[in-house]
Amino acid sequence: MMNSAASLDEQQLRIDLAAAFRIIAKLGIHEAVANHFSAAVSADGRRFLMNPKWRHFSRIKASDLVLFDLDEGDCIKDRADVDPTAWSIHGQMHRQLPQARVVMHLHPPFATTIAALADPQIKPIDQNTARYFNRLAIDDSYAGMADSEQEGARLAGLLGDKSRLMMGNHGVLVIANTVGEAFDDIYTLERACQILVQAYATGQPLKVLPDAIAEHTAQDWEQITDFSIAHFEEMKRCLDAEDPSYAQ
Image 1 (cartoon, rainbow, N blue to C red):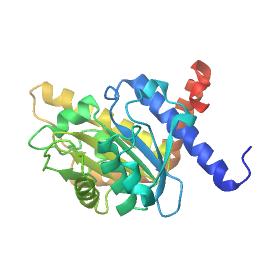
Image 2 (cartoon, rainbow, N blue to C red; image 1 turned 135 degrees about the vertical axis):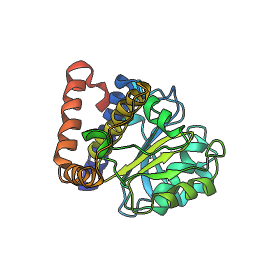
Image 3 (tube, rainbow, N blue to C red; image 1 turned 180 degrees about the vertical axis):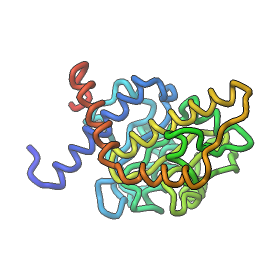
C-alpha cells in the first residue's frame, strides 16, 4: 500500500509512461525493441523511471519500469536490464537538464526521414509543421550509436533553451514537463514530418508560411498545453477500453 504523496506521484508516472509506450506501439512509430522514454521522480532529476532493456513497447506495464539513480551510475551501466545507449542518453539528459522531467527518444519513420536530409529543418507549411518553427535544436554530428556518457552530455548540451532535438541521421528527442505533453509533442512532430515528406514527394515547390504567421502559430501551440494533456488522456481512455493491463 502506498503511504506518501511521493509514492502516489511515482505510481502515476509509471502508469502514464507505460500508457505512452503502448500508444506509441499502436501508432507504429516505435523501433523494434529499441528507443526509450524516461521520467524524473526526484526534483533534481537524478532518480528517474525508464523502460528496461529490449522490452517491446506493446508489452510494457507500469511495474516493469526500472527506477534509476544517477548516484549509482558505476553499478547501473553494467546491469543486464540496462541498454548502454539508453543510459548514455537519458542519464545525461536528467543529469545535465533537471528541468527535463520527461524525455522521449524515438526513431519514427517520417521524422527520421527528415533527420536524414541535408536540411533537417521542419519547414512551416501547415499548422502542425509551424508548431516547430525556430523551435528545433539540430544535431548534425552523428558518429554512431550513442553509447558513451560523453555523447549523451553532448546531445544534452545541444538542446540549449529548446525542448526538441532533431538528431541528424538518427531520430528525434523531446523533453517536457509531463508525459502527456511529451507524448503529444512527439506525436505531432512525427505528423508534421509525415506532411512534409509527402509534400516533398510531390516534387512541387513548397508553399512555406511567412515567418510572422509561422511564429504566431507556434506561439498559439505553446498556449494550449491543456490540448496536449487532453489528447493523451483520451488516448489512455482508448487503451482502458481495449487493454488496461498497462497500468498493472
